[in-house]
Image 1 (cartoon, rainbow, N blue to C red):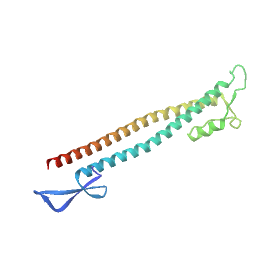
Image 2: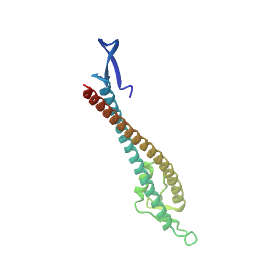
Image 3: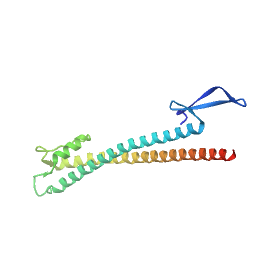
Image 4: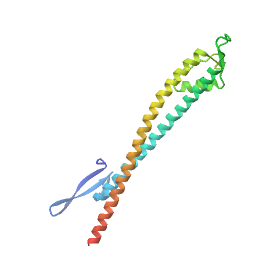
Amino acid sequence: MADLIATSEIPGSSVYGVKQMQYIVDGEEGKDYADALTAASFRQSVAIEEAAAAFSSVVRLRERKVDDLSAILAYLAEANAKLKPKNQSKDDQAPVNNGAWVNETASKYGITLVFVENTANMTRANIMRGQNDVQYALDVEDNNLQQDMVTLQSYIQKRDNAFSSASKVVKKALKASNSTIGNM
């Protein structure tokens, strides 16, 4: 907040030997101390609010990625469940509906799934490999999401504290001015 407020001496004015100062908040001159502190407090609060809003969009994107990875993992688990046991048949392939969506979404997040027969079927080995890759990416993303949520919570606490501090400054300034007027 100190970088929001600058001071400049009012030339030729001093009261009982004390130089009089004016305060400049973001280039706006002519503020007294209470006005400058109030303006700076509220500007800091708004800046924290804007940072929290921007960061929350990052968290929403990460949540979307976790949802997509979970859907891919569910597809792979379903495809694995549809496979016949190895001892019943040598046919070790399972149909996967929307296999193209699974492949495109996985590749969007940097995961390569090996599909067979134009993305219509997958082998058990490919499914297992894909499940491991997707589960690893999901675990990493979930950990990052948890860290982002803690950071977002910190932003919100800072914002609340900044607004609270700004409100207290306004109340104290109002009380001081009322007291001064009452003493006159």
